[in-house]
Length: 228
Image (cartoon, rainbow, N blue to C red):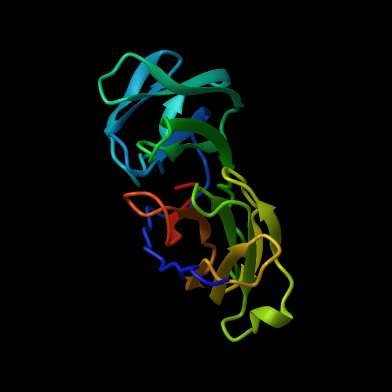
């Protein structure tokens, strides 16, 4: 599709995978809102993150298990921009992702939260696992192809179809080695994002599709390690 720009992977790897050993819910926060102010994050009405910048990924924190309300505000501002109540269980691990636009052209800011359960059990030594999350408002509805590097996309079927903003694939299991991730508008073969990732032994990764810092295309990617 004319005008589409191929994204370049900005690879951000945090920590390493591992088994959960403490009997409480573990929650971390990721800010994927471009073109906006830093954010404050709240759990059950208590501020736990102050001044989270775009792409900032916190460490896992320990929180009481059960029905939990998460909320986000602009830095040091009282008004809640978005909130979400979800069930977090011990000893599982979760990522709360802030999505939307901080300062879009000719329309009001729009924030939302999603709660993702993160895998923490290590795969066996010959495999790795990878999940894809659409965190890019500019991308719209997308198809995702995860293939060997030399596969012709025109001859391939999507690995995941019609991922909307905030949509997450299941973790897919892959042999150790390089996998090529390509993202297209849903139903199209025009490339929005194209990057090859090396997946090591027993790795647990999520690739977050995202906008540029100022918002909009090209679609970029941030890869993080889960369950550490």
